[in-house]
Length: 631
Image (tube, rainbow, N blue to C red; front, top):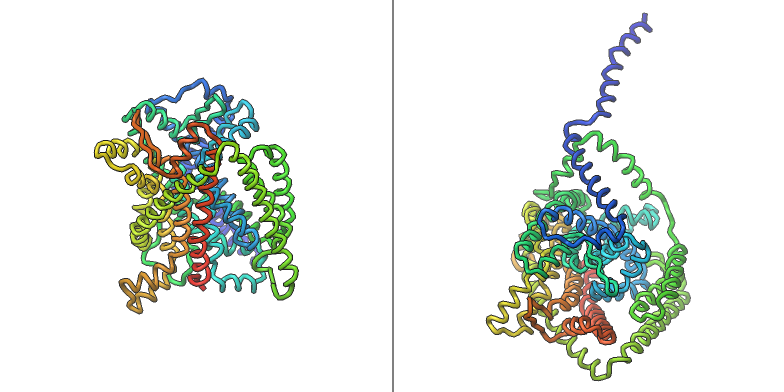
């Protein structure tokens, strides 16, 4: 009888259990809303990939049409390029920023290289990479696509790397000690502590990099190889054709398309990332309002999509928890092997030899350098001093070799008097950059704090700020040219705002990132102690956002030097205005094809950028790391 009653109870219990398990495998109403969106994104990505595998002759035979009906396809192609460049920039950021932050020896080389890389014009990268990519995929659109993606990558990676490097250097010391007490390996500490701590600032800098990439889309989608030009379908090539044809209606369609695309990737990518990364803030209490995302809420409410993503999440979690012990051997093999190959191909080309020489020194470092946290100077003082001497000698010898190679090439067409002239032009551009960065800081630091303290306001301002950062400055050239000519104004003064027009947003985005990442606990303490007015700025907020401001200042100043090349020499039709400065010098000689003077101008610009960062921004970094670090 007991067995019969037990069987009857099981019959009454099992059907609901089975039905509940079956229901968990069925989609709910939120799945039906999310599936069309996911399928649409997959279709767009696959369509774009298929077009990149087409023969190169397919796009060479088709001219860019100014028919607005083609803009949706052009916008899709441009957006896919920018997303691919963003993924590559993120991988570069995690690797390069970690290496620079973890090793004091690598930092001495990698950070100055980063200063130089952000000052080199984008066209300078394209000139010696496009041939490589076209040869890598002969006869295919994919080669030109890779060249365009690499050009966009160079406009995104440096800002993100500086942000990640700053975050790695300012991780609270007590959290580092906790990770050591838990005996986490460097791999585990990287994914469990350092990456989560850097995410809020990194995501805001990804926004800025994505928007800043629009400025270089025009140059990156028109690939020139010798006398041949490969024009890729995209918003940038459409804009170039509209400017060349002086078609104002087409320019208006471009602005509308850019607005819609920016809103789309803000809602589908960055808004969910900002809301998701809010959980990594260092605080015990929550603010009055938190960032929200309708897409993130939609995915969290789905049933089938959540179950489909769960294996991937478990895999990533397992990889992050795996006690992997990374050594420098793999990095040494990769860096040394690739560097030897590149040197064999490009040793006779002095411009290419500059970054390659640095890569060789990085390969040498990987066998000499030791982690910051693992060095115990008292235990091995002699070995440490010997390593420092060898490393310093390698840097010195490598620098002499690079200087000799560049100097020998420049001396073939440039005299000593020309060098002095270029140094004077560099000082003029330096004054412009310093004055404009100061003015931009006075405007955007208070506004950035105001926006960052109000998440609801930040959600409304975020798309507008991205649009303004993405707005190509060359669309404003006609206004400046006509205004300067009409009022007979001085180009040396009134062309200067164009230098900082696209780079000032680095300061705003980093200040907003610093304000949103500022612990709510500290703000409540300041409120409880009734700290107000200037004292609140001086004691509470400015110290909290200072590391982020330094990152924004470095990238803004480096970008301003780069922008001077197109801002100190502008034209509209037959009217051309030129301001005295290093940027116009490089632009004029680039148009004339005078390579010794081009290299001289770029070398002097790199010298000014490195010295400016060494004398101003680096001391600020050290001060922020030692005095303004969250303990």
